[in-house]
Image 1: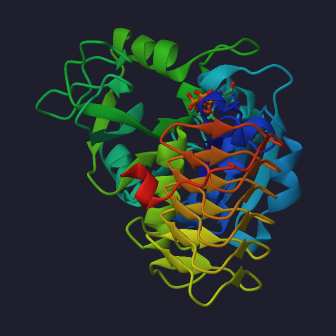
Image 2: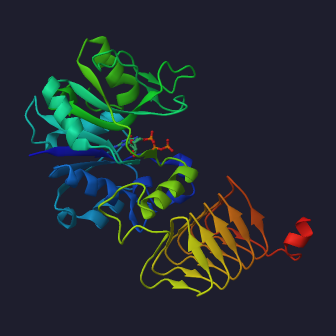
Length: 359
Ligand code: GTP
């Protein structure tokens, strides 16, 4: 049986405050938890058994996905009592894998949105008889990633995690095919990083570690800007997902949402079933979670309203995260990078911002 390990145990600190209550892979993204897109893609690639390596808020995953029947998958869950890191998390679930020593096991980061062909990556791994085959993608700036130079045969020659001077723009894209025996050789019972320890050790030991370059859609959703973009790209169909709850388009307005007839919702915005958008408001490329509210004339772009968050009349938000239950009063203007903590209340501005005032 074809199987995969999904790494979903991280605390998602860069996405705070959204991840204070919800683990990053469970954040609503184009109307469903982000992980639903990953699971649906795994199933489409022929994977039948998935083990979720959880640590932070493990119950949120099992309560939502259960045994996996909704995806045609068998899903098992393992919770780390102390976070074991990426390789530690993989090793910790090995008792639930059924693959033989030389069989390929797919490992997916639970925070990567990728359109790459997983089945083709598995086939390349099998054909080469590799120990590990890493999906590589090309980025403009490799410094925040693991840089993976390859030789002419496609073999990875070095693994430089978050190097200030990356030697290649090909980076680790967070989807690995590992021979089962490689997983069993990871030290058990202590934190281990696949990026900083396992891959460099495999290279040092002369293992066959292949780079599988695929330049399909790829995005690591680790920051608020990336998360909101991933959601918008899914809604618009730029990132393919069998789990999108509706046809691709400019907006995903879920049944039950209340949107004023003259409000403009576009740029891949999602409006959750119990969210509400008032008269004359414009919402572009944003995520409005359950119970959130945008009052009349407010203008939101590339922003996230957490569960039950609200924005007063005429307020302008661009690239902002409003935490669960927080309220940004009327007439405010917040720009890129601002984060409003859950349940915070920003008062109304007594003098309203207007185009005339801005001069
Ligand atoms: P930041 O705190 O914002 O860096 O996010 P993160 O904690 O998710 O870390 P990172 O983005 O580096 O993690 C990459 C993937 O590995 C994500 O899918 C995480 O959920 C997962 N992950 C990170 N640390 C652990 C861990 O200790 N155990 C398990 N099981 N998964 C982990």
